[in-house]
Image (tube, rainbow, N blue to C red):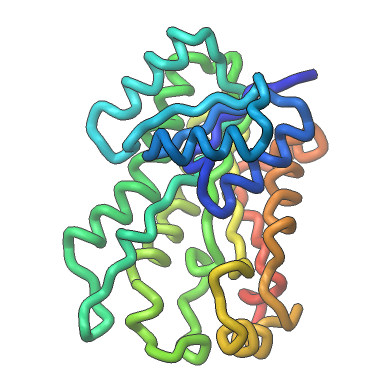
Length: 251
């Protein structure tokens, strides 16, 4: 049966892979993007399928969630699966000491924790019978602290606000799972390890020495955990953080 999935941050590194996967499953895919141009380019990249729908939104704006709900209502969409995936690299700034400003710390927390909370509750309040799963996209750094040996210039290259926000996202997952359990809505989180793409060879070599799998994740590997959590075979799984990090966090 075809499902409708809403993926925030659909044009990003993970988002594109998620979109591609659920297009192959012939689901109705809604995705948010802060850029109309990037949204249009993504649709063109996948040959303009009828079941791929962009929503241009700055999710950090106070009116974003209400505007998104109105967009869904106007277009007749009812969301079965929500994937809180949006992020911004601009919020990971540090100063010369490797420290972050209050502004960037709060902005990262807003996008990583508050926005997923607001959007999840909004869908829960307006269409609880349709909503089946919520999946928050987390990180290994929400499970363990960053390893200084991975970086050339730690802590400048490992902004503290990122891991702290991802840890909070993991706990938000538990809270939402409890609050939505009576409506049979499952809420989970995926803590991904580092994924190839932006890292140079030196970084990948250091990463390999610090994880049991001796490598970074491949881009195509990010889809499997999400597909599992959205499927009927994981019907007993809720409130959990599924760690997909190649073993990074076990030693």
